Image 1 (cartoon, rainbow, N blue to C red):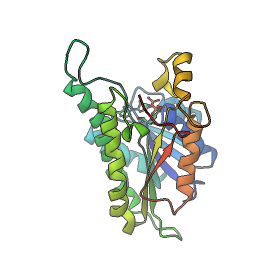
Image 2 (cartoon, helix red, strand yellow):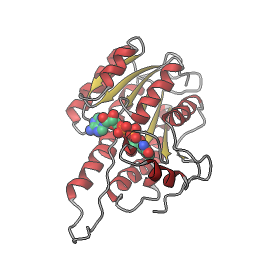
Image 3 (tube, rainbow, N blue to C red):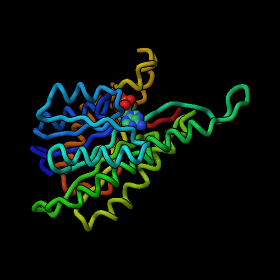
Image 4 (cartoon, rainbow, N blue to C red):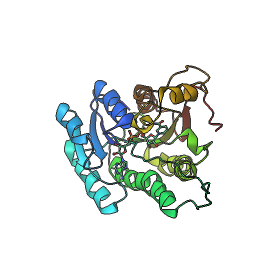
Length: 255
Ligand SMILES: NC(=O)c1ccc[n+]([C@@H]2O[C@H](COP(=O)([O-])OP(=O)(O)OC[C@H]3O[C@@H](n4cnc5c(N)ncnc54)[C@H](O)[C@@H]3O)[C@@H](O)[C@H]2O)c1
């Protein structure tokens, strides 16, 4: 799929990796509709590039909001060619605290609601629009890119909620690609390692140095541009489908 003049929905596009994807797509001539929480910086991003970026406020856990937000996104430029799902939450909780208190059900439910069910709901609504596109010369009607995480493969201590949600995203990748193959819609999940976004804002430089020491190479945090470059490659490379791709400098989470 050509990025030039394409229209992408980017959930979570107001911050971190999603904002990097918005930058990467617009720099290559694409247009983007950011779907993010109403109080996020999405409106500012749209105001700074009005010809290429629009913003629709939505909580992805609210199905009625998702339905109207995706319809609004499709109306912005008359179609949707791609979805990049970056909206997500992440926090830790152990099964048992030192005092013996149990992991809360609310914490687990919240991660599944946002990271898995919310992602699935946006994607099914977007697929309805991709399916209406005229296929290009390859027979392609659209591309779906999900943000998983290497924690969905090798979750750390205290990451049961987050890892379960991302494991679900990894799990849906191949069956979804198989469901949509006959429609010419591709599905790929990118699993970043440790990336430099507001999620890491509470860490000290020493803690960050300790984390990147676990990278094979390069020994630095991943940047939103690293994710954006891979998303753009997935758009362009029609042969990539049903794949789960690690983007982690060789890091394995062993803690
Ligand atoms: N940063 C990392 O190290 C890392 C590593 C692997 C995977 N990821 C994944 O990449 C994605 C982006 O992470 P990030 O680091 O950029 O985080 P971030 O917190 O900077 O951005 C997440 C965005 O999602 C939005 N969001 C949260 N809940 C929402 C909801 N209910 N409805 C709509 N929007 C909502 C937030 O407003 C925010 O703009 C997440 O799915 C995250 O799990 C991040």
